[in-house]
Image (cartoon, rainbow, N blue to C red):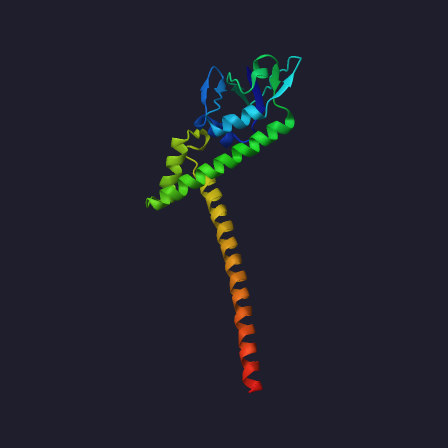
Length: 180
């Protein structure tokens, strides 16, 4: 059984190739993959045939034969609009986590940012990004900037808390001296 959904981002459509095998114009979904389990859980059932979506942003998935979802091969299946949005969001999250892990592991190995990103693009088959590492560099830069801002904010709160505690201790100590 094949279902279709719309993935607006070319980057995410390319990224699916690193998760599933693409054959006969559809990605073969496996429940052994976390994203495969997620896709299976998003399936809706219908008594009537449901047409496949069409267009450049449409991705087709060949669903697995599995005892976990026996209705999948007895009824018509589809992904509704809500499931489609959730799938795209989950795919974006998986991409971000995968990229960050790859990036920071590459940094730990002492590799340059450009090399890490080029390797990621090639290893994950992101064909639309070959020769264009700037998008991923900017994404990583923004991610690091948010992280630094959060760390600075946490540090400022900690310093403020500790400063207040020290000031309070000084006041108590000075007050105890003045009473003597």
